[in-house]
Image (cartoon, rainbow, N blue to C red; front, side, top):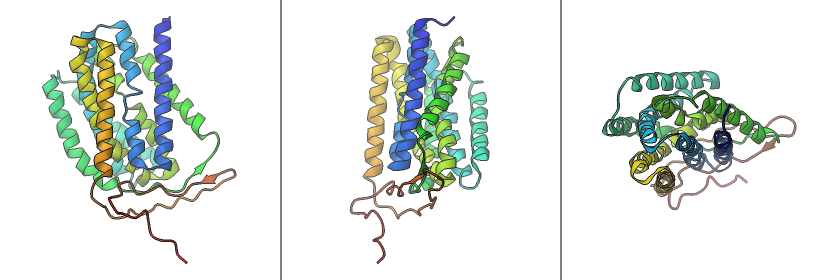
Length: 301
């Protein structure tokens, strides 16, 4: 039977992941894809996974797991790229299936290699160095008007928490290689695809995932910090440092993206609210307004 510490950390991971997914999806719908994406890439859901490891394993086990996590982090970037392109034309189920298949294929390949820190850093540099420019064309989309119902948020939280529980329990007795994979299993990313694509359409959902591609760079730096710090400093200090690195990276990304040069106004995607009890919201702002840019065209007389 699972002990009390495991159940406590499992509950923490389920709650944290559900909170991140719900917050990121709601923020993306109301404010814009960039901020929602940066919320989604904070390690608030992954942190409890490594806390669970620290309860039962020593620092060297965690360090070994982070190498595998960094290797699997590259296929997560591949998932973002494939989905961003697939969502432009395919329905939700097809776009999700194609991108999930790309992630699985990438994981199968990287797990066949015995990686060093230098090797996984080079792999991720190549993946994100090529992937971020490829999906940048999809980031500049306004969030459409949508319908919200009272059960949306609790239903999202329940579904995500159930998925997290299943994944964590399945990997609770795994070795460092499989544990490293499960620690960075893209639950948040996949949950956002399933939640957002049917609600706001493929192009707008792709904008969130394309912005997540940039935020995942900060997440990768967070895992690197954990790997470097865990053996000399211990798990508690290393986890705090890793979280600080993630916050600093995402703040920097936000400032750079918001402070960039003006871009053309994106095409609005019209999705009127329908159904009983639906509440329509107005489209979100331009994702990357530059200095002096206007929020949109003036109203017609």
